[in-house]
Image (cartoon, rainbow, N blue to C red):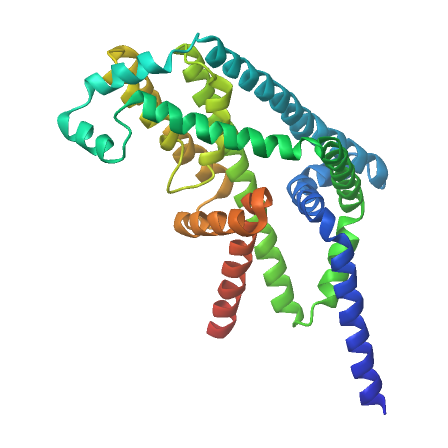
Length: 347
């Protein structure tokens, strides 16, 4: 009889947990970023508690204000400037200030014969054909945007609700994080030593990997944007954001942005600009990853680049934008579990 009651209770627990997950799924992204923010700023919150013992509410509030000042407000300013620069760039294209046909003819005249044959095979040798394809793609994109325009207000409201949920959750995780962690620790059906090793190793790897990736992306994007601005290239902020995004993919990196631009500058006769961009790309933007990442992440806790690359691409495919974090998190959990398992077997 008692065994049957235990089975019923376990089934009830599974159903209740599944129902809770189903309810909070709409705020998956907000919860994810709230947990990540709490993990990253937990050491800062701990230092505040050392300065003012027992004042958990004040420490958590100050940590939350630091998160808003360091991450939320700069992201909002960046998004606003990005939209404005995209609108300005679109206006320059519409007004003819940016003459794509002139640039296309310049680049085409500087190409070797084998490159001419290659682009002719793809039907891109004629600018009118290329422009028709671009216009067709833009028209399709505009139709898609128009179809989503009705939901813009709801999407904006949903974004601010998600942001509020994230900040609200972050505050309580910072304030009660130790208690929440202890409850989860006690609930895991593992031996105490195995549980402690798994938790400590996972949190260390996650904190180092996420912090390192985000800081390196911001620094590389900022340096790339400054170089593009110095060279007088249009849309420097757009290029900066693109380089920051691609820097999260180790096998691709910022080179996917600056290498084609440098080739274009050299091919169109802008020799010193092209050489300067190559120099900065290799020895300034590219070296940031080699210098900063080992300092921020450490060699012992660093996830191999090929694992980060595959996990990030898979995370983007499965989770969308949240995959930038979910992919490395899942990879960190996978490697941590196997590392603890191997260490336990050896002991």
